[in-house]
Amino acid sequence: MKNTDLQVKNQTMETFLQNEYIVRTLIKGAGGKCELCGKKAPFKDKNGNPYLELRALEKDFNIKKEEIEKKIVALCPNCNRKLDVLEDPADFEKLSEIAAHHDY
Image (cartoon, rainbow, N blue to C red; front, side, top):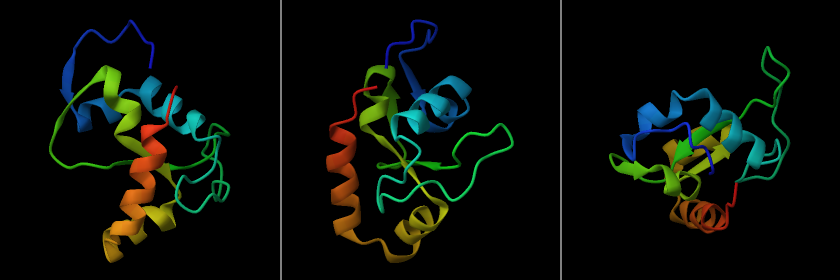
């Protein structure tokens, strides 16, 4: 991510996800598709953008702005809920591999 407007080096994930620029960049980087199932976003938001939910791959951590795209994935609502319900290690492994190759 190359946004010089971000002044703070470390913030909580919640604070990052409140930054509209970061949210748009991460969802745009996913190409409008869920990074787990690969399907197109199920609908568009009120602004016409693909609706995907951002998911941190780690809980309760501080993150540097340079690392954010390697720690978050964009998921359809079903896959996001699937991670909560099933907690399948294979899904997390797949998403970690995908996130490691993000280059927004």
